[in-house]
Amino acid sequence: MTVERRSNLLGSILNREASLARFRDEEFDLAVIGAGINGAAVARDAAMRGLKVALLDRGDFAGATSSRSSKLIHGGFRYLPQGQLRLVYSALRERERLRRRTAPHLVHPIRFLFPVYRGRGFGRLTMAMGLTLYDLFARTPRAEWHSNLNAASVRELEPALSRDALTGGAMYYDAWADDARVTFENALDADLHGAAVANYAGVEGFSRSGDRIAAAGVRDLIGGRSYELRARKFLNATGPWVDHIRRLDDPSSGDSVRLTKGVHLVFARTVLPVRESLVLGDEGGRIVFVMPHDRYVLVGTTDTDFSGDPASVTTEPADVAYLLGVLAESLPGMKLGARDVASSFAGLRALERAGEGSTKPSAVSREEVLEISKSGLISVAGGKLTTHREIAQKLVDVVMKELGRPTGTCPTLTVPFPGARPLGADERLASDDAMMKSIPIAAAEILRARYGTRAAILARLVAERPDLAAALAPGCPVIKADVVHAARSEMVHSIHDFLIRRTSLSWRYPVEAEASAPAVARILAAELGWDAQREKTELASFTSDQRARRVAA
Image (cartoon, rainbow, N blue to C red; front, side, top):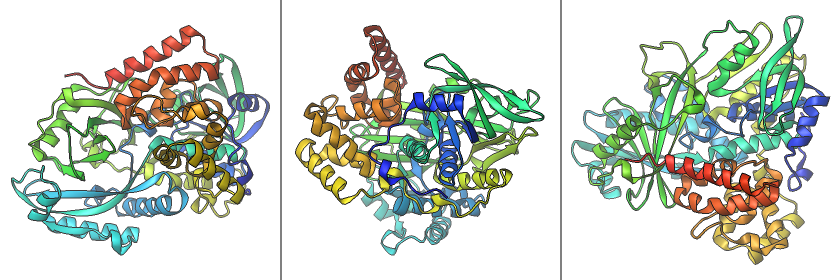
């Protein structure tokens, strides 16, 4: 295991050009294709164990599924009746590790109210038994132990809930996180431990030495150059594109995963004024979460089979109608329609194919899918955001053994994410002083929630340029320093990268995101050297996409 490079914590800059040069000039122990949550976590673990690692993605970090989840770090209560006890146990242990030890700045508790209706979903006894098991698996502190409620207590907590056939409910704790930031900090930590990391670098084919993959042809999708990336082992973690990469290795490969679509809707809290985060069931026993976040409420998700181009997954009228139907059944007084949707997003899950055609998507196991080809290509897909660290540990154990290296103790069991590592006393004092002098209190708290201790980097920027403490737009919780930092140190190359993935503003504050886009475009143009036409094109593209997410009635 390598020594943690804490001295780089505030000076780290993700340098894409340097990584591309390393792709060209060096040979790696492991090349990870795909910088979603699985790929980024594998790269982090492998680099921390001393392997020479390359991490690349043809899009941005968390560019697809890993920025389009329900944002939950949870055990998955609904998997208990399906008998997936090991999955729930592992997920709850990982939830607690992230929340309390390795990523407390990113992973936060969320309290759910789960109403029980006669003839719909779980009964009161089943729920009580399941939540008891849930708390035992997680070793939940007594202060956060679930509580069983009668119908009157449920109505008092959330008066908007339908009273028809309401028999009671329960209150319990789980956790939530910004999925894109969790993914990014994995990639950042891989870089901090010596990995070569680059986004917008696509694999176009493989070359062999004998019957084993020896190199990948990589194209820089920004600069247009091509490279030969050499590595002893290649790992394919491209999510919905996992079979595309498998076929670059072996054109005869069949499908290894079943793709299902999950859609989320975002409403202003003024039109969906729920008091509590809710777990609602439909007539088929599926679960839909209703989660207030500041001024907006996130509702999801759907679970339907998908076929077609993974790059073209969108929210469709049927998806909106389903989620509105669940809300109407449990919250009949809200009277919501498609016109009330402030934004939406759709992502794809990669599930195992067992039972496809006869098994409902929601009943398919959420365990990861793993395959190793004759050429040595390791392919992984699926799993849960919550269990990304455990999945990566298993995969890196395999890689270490195949490379003839001792697996040792997995460092990610205990080593915090970059934003959860303590600063030195001088760094901390300087950071706190800069925050207090230059950045409004509310903005400083948001920075700490996004960057953890590394918020000191932005405090330094603001200390040098006080104008960067200004909000991007009226009512926007993101400041100009965020954009400068993202352009200089977080490999942001577009407005989409910044507003969708580095800050999640596009779903957390969709109206404010659109209002902020012109300021983001101006700052990125200055930092990245865009001309006037590029700035105009970027702004038009983001604005068009953001408006399309409203799924007009």
